[in-house]
Image 1 (cartoon, rainbow, N blue to C red):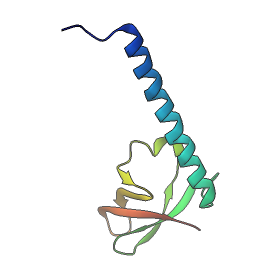
Image 2: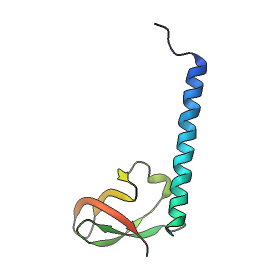
Image 3: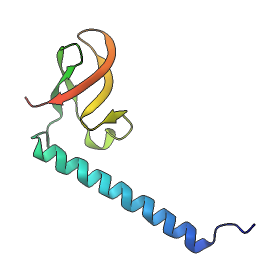
Image 4: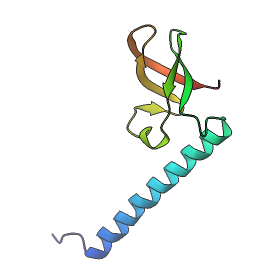
Length: 89
């Protein structure tokens, strides 16, 4: 069984880079459409209805477990881990 050729490895690497660029571009486009662009602190609402401010660093959103704008974060108001939704100010 032959290993992957150098060309296959390079193409795979370029595909991963392209996908990462597209994900970041879509995230920034979505943030600008929702009015979240350029803000360091935004409001978030947890599943129980608690509202609190959180820091939004666009490049640091990638490691946060999320689906769309729903993220799994700590709610400092209710002192529990829950799903939160980023909201407009």
